[in-house]
Length: 474
Image 1 (cartoon, helix red, strand yellow):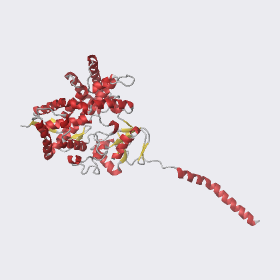
Image 2 (cartoon, helix red, strand yellow; image 1 turned 90 degrees about the horizontal axis):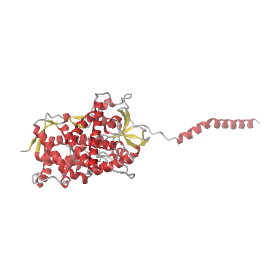
Image 3 (tube, rainbow, N blue to C red; image 1 turned 90 degrees about the vertical axis):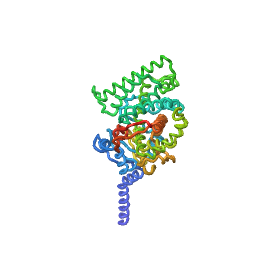
Image 4 (tube, one colour; image 1 turned 120 degrees about the vertical axis):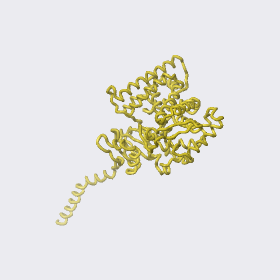
């Protein structure tokens, strides 16, 4: 009986221990099937609300981004301009956001800036509307279209250069390049616009531009409030130009003409507001970026006389073929300026005018094991990629010869990438070719009170706008 009682007690003990351990076994099995949640990228979110905005704008932004990448790697988080952000500094990551998985991210801009440009502008949208408008803009700025603008661009180039010489004074090169770029933008949008309209647009656009990066305060008399009023006047001027075209039944092939003539499959046309927003958007995109690169080209050529002589040889061959500049440039000639082309490409890489772009995650996204939460801003860092020695050896040396060999895919994207890349890149480069041609064959220049340094306004430009004096060649 004692043996039976002992066996029964042992069985009871084992059964009790199984019952007690069941929850632990069940929990263990659950743990085996739980997948670890992806973590946020490494980085610092800075102070509450202001994040690291002060650090970003109290120093060279490029130093800010480069130091972050050195500390945390090619994916890191931060908090700037009131928004949590994920920064991406590799070509693969930029392509992921802008090309292969672009549907997971939407273009995003502060509402204050959207109001000044116009909410219907191309670069605030994605999907069907974006595709339709982008096609119209691309058609109006295609090589087939802009090649017809060469005589007009040449006229504008010579007029600008002569005005810089005739002053006999030191000029702010960046500000003068902005005037030149704005006039080319007007030409591409409106064709030959009457002087009074051009002057009115320029006057009001300058007010809008000052307000674009100001504090968005609607109190009367503030910079932003004045910008909103000027934006309204630009809308009225464009409406007047549209009304005239419709009355005269003009069928121009400039951007305004393409926008006016558009009809969708339901025979619906674009509203005047949609047209005005996209006109202002194109003018905004065309001015500061092109002017910044042209200013840097002036500096780079001034700093390297050997390179300047190589450019002159490139251009004098064209100049002599055109009977000492008596004949206008041709499209074919602008396509056959190899040394000049490499200088333009290297200037675009070195200056990296568009240092980054903004996107916003529309859903939770996991990239390389890191979580990008829905609603967070995502910033592909073009400048970090352009200045990475892994892709561009000795990246801080100005060396156009590096472009004798094509760069690796996605490592050189001065005009962005994907469906939101700049549709006016060919016009921008054509402006550069034509200005460089006339500059080096007929003029000389000197940077005055030379100082190395960069200012951000908001695009990077040489310090003080590169004070420069111009002369005609004897």
